[in-house]
Length: 594
Image (cartoon, rainbow, N blue to C red; front, side, top):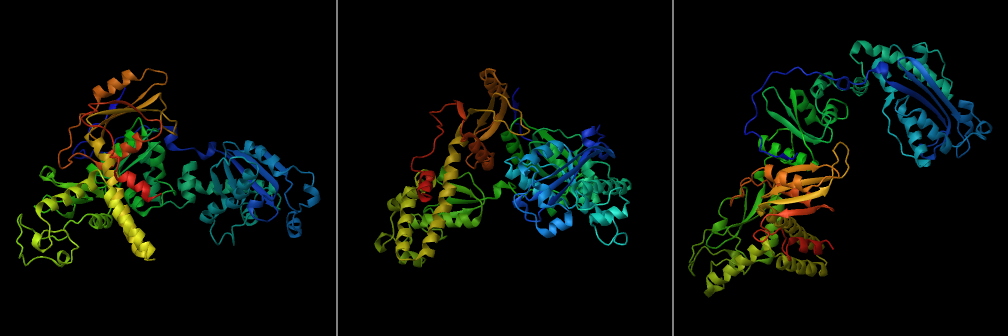
């Protein structure tokens, strides 16, 4: 059945003591005693991995200390074996002359190692050659989990125990039953004994699972490893997750196709961001919200970030603090940069934004001033200015400002002329970017013809800043005014997301009011009607756009404009058509980028 998106609570819930969670075996991780390892060693010609110069592969499959099988074969390399390598390994050109090429060997080895954890001494060297061999054989590298015994030895073997971490040195230290001799199978057998000895040293350090082993090898701080329990009991499902502290305050909000796996990654070596390390240190609980579709998860994330303002989220925080360009509602309007949209649209004010930075808003204002002679001063001019006004500015005297300061007698504009200028500016902000585009393009062409390329680039930056913001606003406005819109798209397969017949989306006044998945093969119309009946009630945004989260509307537009999306119904399309202006900023921007 469809799910409605209701606004979250206005304040975080009161802190509750941690509740006991019944953990599953999957939560606890994969025990080392039952993990299958394939210990591999390669002999090569000594060249770079891209040459795929493998001469021998040896591997041993073990689980729980028991050998399950061995793999060994010589390989005919694409080039001759250097003499010093023949002397080191004992493998000669004559020995590999009748051996199979790497293209015939790699598939057999991959089948032998399927589903196992790969182990090697100095693993990047061996895996580098295996990757190259897969590429040469036109096979996909399966990307198995890898354990490097060199890395483990650096953490577990003290300097006074061994002078180095070479395989021969460690084999002697641990009394390996096989002496490494630069032959693949012998070295793999010796590595098995070294691996078991190293794992034995980890027993008293709390390392019992493969996940523990990986975090230990990566030197993950013990305090972060200890927080792994926060992922226990979380759903392996797509959705949103919230890290909270002991007081119930939301620290961070994120989305994932698999909430449990993503949250677990915060406690491993893969998470290297200092801010996230600090956040994990303060977190005491993780609250999941399972979602039916990626769009629902994205919207819930935006709403939670906007409501709680998590200190560790960098993006989407405090959307109301964006910069807007305002055509003021004064007697003689001008352009101004503001931080808040007010309910003065009825008085004649027009807004463009929000801009991602004040700098981009300033560039857009400069572009508009190039095309439309609005006054640029901040003085409060009376509705009927005097011709002898001593406050007339220098720009007006030079004819570079359309302000009415001077009066018609001295070259200023009268009320009717300036009203036309203001209307041209308003149309540029809302529906018609053509005159602004033409004016700046002509200026850029002129400057380029004079080889004043830096100045031409400045004008291009101004025009681009204006067109980008105007295009977003002109695309967003019709959707924000639409009372109701239902769209559908065949549910596309994606990792972690359930696949149904149709993904249904209900939009009201630019907000996601509900989403649903209809089963494959079922008639979707009953699900559409149920979605409309149970969807969130959204009130029209007021003149100050209260309640209209622009990032949410942008996310909905991105989804609606995907290939394959179909409009199911639009409520009252004549009163609020979903359309963009023909000569709008999108058209002009396409010409600019052509």
